[in-house]
Length: 213
Length: 213
DNA sequence: TTGACAACATACCGAGTAGTATGTTCTTTG
DNA sequence: CAAAGAACATACTACTCGGTATGTTGTCAA
Image 1 (tube, rainbow over the protein chains, first blue to last red):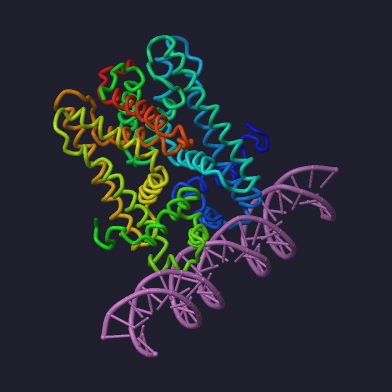
Image 2 (image 1 turned 90 degrees about the horizontal axis):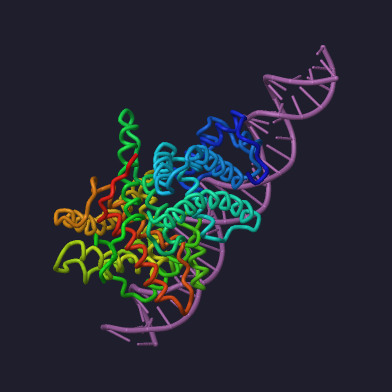
């Protein structure tokens, strides 16, 4: 996607990406030094700069890796036949579960979007970020088209699609901020949480109740 | 709240807080230097360090200022008589509108919570952040108690209150990430957006529809 | 008038940090 | 087996940042 990088088949590069994801999640982009990532690898900067031209590109690599993963996760449901509302449910469930399973990568992607919204940065970093956010937008468009179609089919009800997609994603993504994996009871926990979160959003999309102000 | 600082009556200190809020929002905590804040003020570090012992305390000041403000905003509805569901609607509307009107401060508060969730930091910074997050939790407890009461009254339906409160707040806070104030048409815009967002969440809380998986 | 203190500005220090230039070792290929 | 390049490690530079120590100016009470 967007040129530059082939699929991460190199195992050394993949190892760097995972270590970088951990660091970026724990401290955030600016607070993470390249030396931090190297330390976590038991290596030195040399290794990282051999594979990535800059810290920004390392971050971009993690972002893209995270996006690639979640795209694979929801792929089976993208073109599912049947009502759009049911397709949305499967997409949302897969998405939300992945938010918890790959919490680290998900938060890096989040920070990437946040950084982009902040603006600023150097012109070249803008270009990189713009590309990444375009990737991210193509992902969110999958959901957008689905809920719009479900509205046309009479199952979902809302006014502005843009506002609705934002509200929806924020709620679905929420677990990446508070979910803490507990070894052992993980899988059933994830299932239960995802079900509750998706139910909440599903009701928000299907409900007809108006506010009496 | 939590000792240390009296109400911000000093105008110079207040000016510093607002400039700091702008900087923290634009670049984030770590990427914002004390010199950045000083530059925005047309001053130097000396002025800031005269009023705040450290960068962390400056951040804490902004956080506390932001929390003080939003507490004032929702105060009129805290003990509103009548059904909890209606009280929640008023609270949520006031909250969401404030997220857009005071977007800058709201995002600083957000980052404070995010920083706390990351853990790490020095022990003393932990103490400061812990206090701030306690403040923030007392705020979210207002909403928590309201929705639990509304459930007892039969208006809201959900399983785990913790999960529900998180999903709710994420959706209500969403505008701080994408709302961009447009001069002139602000107020009606804010009203419209807040109404749509709160309606979405309201339906999520009241709806009964189950997922068919 | 004067001394004391508040409210800053200026100058500086030590600790990082992104990035580079170069050395070293291992692997692959002709 | 030799030579070339990949995959790092080491050493270094230029720079930034949080924090402090100290200088300067205005204000105000005695």
